[in-house]
Image (cartoon, rainbow, N blue to C red; front, side, top):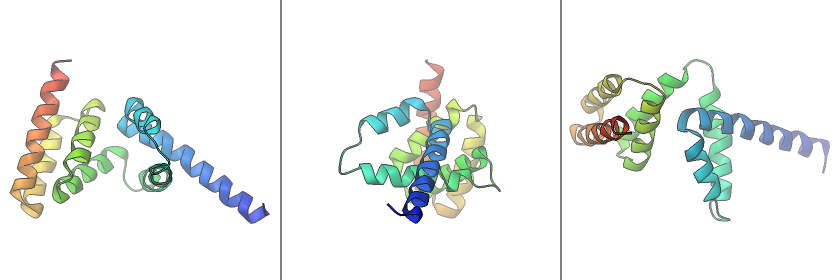
Length: 136
């Protein structure tokens, strides 16, 4: 392996370590441990990619803190109608102590720009997650 290859691999490992820390901080250890345990040959490269790029680069940038990124993520997932990821990020935000009313404001604001049906569904997911958190 050349010196350039070694530097490249060191950079990938460093990004993966930062990404793993950010991913755990945002989604929780249980989620990340489950995702790691469920990796297959088919999904391994994708898991590595999102850990290094989404979590190791984007979530690690200056300019927005994790709470702001959480809110943007919830808005975007609402807008594109990605229910599974939206539910996961709503629950992670609640576990991180973000007030449900703040999440509701994000959903309400998203309704104006991305459509009422998607935001309506987001409110249903939020209500369900809040109820389940209260019953723990």
